[in-house]
Length: 302
Image (cartoon, rainbow, N blue to C red; front, side, top):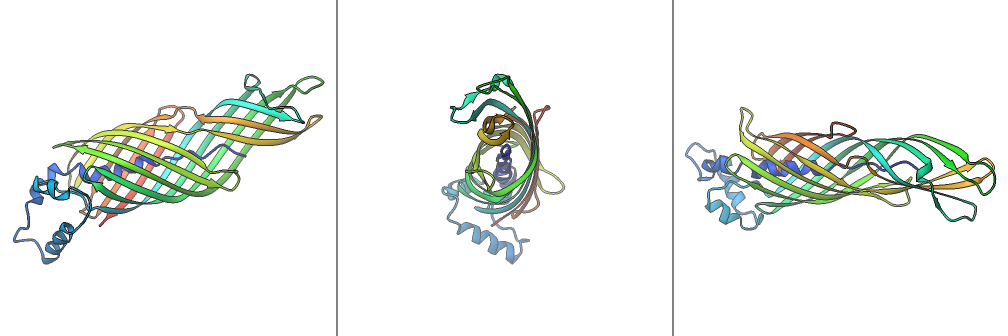
């Protein structure tokens, strides 16, 4: 009985770019062992050579490109605020068929979503990563509307609906990321589908997210660092079904078609590789109007 949680998981794909984009900058580290390296480091590099993934690994390593470890697990925390646009409203009472009343309805909908999640990923190719996500979505939705309904007899009836409800449900998703890079730059494309199962709804809530980012990579006092900017687009929509017992009319069913008011946001982010195994990321997104997104992530590769 409330608008859908809006999912933001494509920003997590930026974490994948943080490993490949620094390849050329670290070419000198892929030339083999130095006398100063410890026995543990020798064993680690020999183990890396035994990895089956990514495919074509040997060709890239022969070019002196230091590839990321093939598998990763990360914890992620996502926060999102976004307004919702109502595209159509239909009302049904008695045995009458549903009637569109979008010209006689005024909706105000806002949405706040928090998603803690875990992601598992693998590099299939040195530039292609696939991942699966699982977690839980918590949504606080505010709905305020005034609807004018024309009954079969009598004057129009004005119905006011106000809801502020918190819901939650299990979240899961799948995605893929492509990354290309050079001496000091990289480009990343990401697409994923995420779904939240909420008991208050008859079916799960899904959203496709598409994003593109471009950025710079280099070396800092903490380790290899990346900064970027880009765009994210949310492709989602849902029909809400509400029921009200109105005076004179009786039981009335209302269907509301909704989608994000502004589906595109501008993303800014940065990540730091502490060592070959650990990486941290922060990304913020906004459209400078009704949407705000924040993603914090920490990853371990092996």
